[in-house]
Length: 149
Image (cartoon, rainbow, N blue to C red):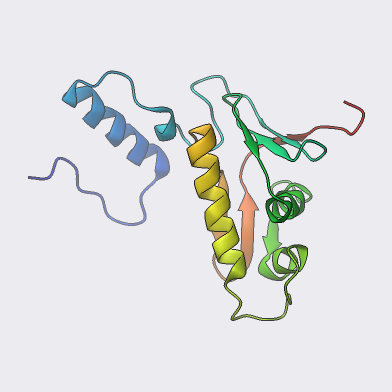
């Protein structure tokens, strides 16, 4: 039988709370880090950190994720517009594709790989939101390391 039934759209906090409740009832102790809300470590509220010189993105829990050149270009574009939406065209151009080609799915593949890599290496979800028909938005505070640091 089903323990929980939710309809779309599901509020992320409600989904996380339901998962925590289920884990608690099953007796497995504390929830894994991947069930923390996007952009947050286990209760410390630390920001994400982006180190362009070191080709790395550091999650709030302190785990560092090494970035490829394309991933660097994507994160650079996303962090250049704090809280803003970055268009598909801008992101496509940043990774070397024709920004006017609406059929190009290379951006989708690159973002999927980046999301999976961050979850795998850092244990938390990348706080990246898809804005349908417009582009993508990074929904977290990201501190950018200066070149002198």
